[in-house]
Image (tube, rainbow, N blue to C red; front, side, top):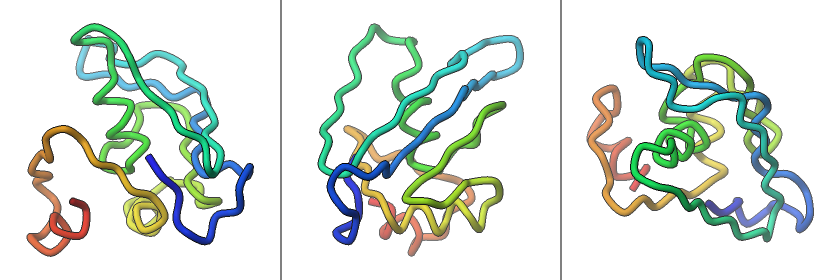
Length: 112
């Protein structure tokens, strides 16, 4: 995950505060808090099913947390309009680019 070119080094570009995500009865993430600063490099390691992809989807503003808060480049992400604005400030390149049903073709190209 990288910050936009106008982010100043050392300032937080991503803040997750007590983020959790459930899929029915399955808890994918539980109370995750982290802060990524401009210029910082971060890696996620863990076994299959540990929640890495879910965490990246939430951080990339393509999936809403069940609880907790997400702030990207100063934008507190609460609704889809906030998420669209926040996605303009970050870049995420997953190993496989999933099709996101609510995205138009143009939005998928911009996302990728």
